Image (tube, rainbow, N blue to C red; front, side):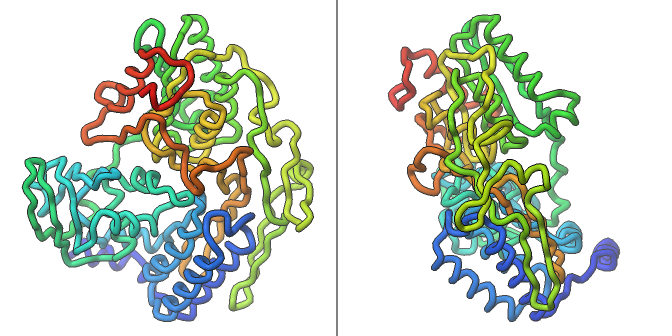
Length: 479
């Protein structure tokens, strides 16, 4: 009781009025419509109009930051731009850590169901590998769609949602949708095939152990055998490389020098943890895998440089996309939008200079739902050019491009929720098939419980087997 009372005293109440909620909702709508280069790339006008109407109706009953946050998430997530962020206010985060009661199972999500990895509290005896069939009457598809309402995702992609909400992620997502719940009526398929019904109680946020430290972000090279190498590239972030005392370009150059010196014939490139990072690091890596640079973007588009919106109470919010020097890299389109010109140092090409040495041997690419942003862009470039046998899952970022790059971080004045709106639409120079989906694998392999990279790893094993077969062109037959 003492700790709860102390937490309640420290955390602000988060109370807002319906009028304040309405102002924040309208400001979020205005900002999205003013700043996104193509609001209807991943959604229809009808869907946007319907979600706006629903959000406005719900705002009339909102009385807290939490209730407003639950209005904003489905409104904005339905746009289908995975780089669009919605961050809780500091007060909401404080109350969540101190007071929230959450679903007591950690899960691994797959196309064929959600599987328990760990249980807490009243669910501590639920064995790993148990399939979660339903919660409070909701089955797997319903739970996944609810999770997508509060999870970033590109287009209609759900693999990214499943990876992003693995482990404790579903408990967080469920709380963001429903808030505190008194309990959960669940149906479980136990590992022995028995179907059981259980009543589970929620647990405090503190019931789960602290997250483990992040692994090294630096790319590493190891050897499968004398002629086959394994290259793990977990990020393209220059900031993370600097924090680790390394340099991205130097690291990649040294790796490909080593591949050439040892005469590697085959390479497994692991992008499964690569959520992107710094432009143009994905193209730098590509330049060591493909001989000639080529045009990757049909266009890079933004709205006019000065974005300006006004709230219902008359507050003006402004943002400039480019600084004076960067304005020299764009030109106006007929409608006033700004288009990137195709000139160094970035432009619309993969890269303006060639790398040496280029690895020309056979390539297997491990990718999945957490392969996003720059990681997904590299996957799309390789898949579009037929370079590499893809093993794993659908890539988390859409194959036709994304809206990312610069971002407008707008703090809503009443709830203090921060909306991060991406400002550059990167459209690739190849068709997106199927529409609104990520790059698809040649060899479909989903993660499994207890997976350990390389040493106990079904996708890695599949890639190794595929590279032992005699093929040159990557197709499903190589699987």
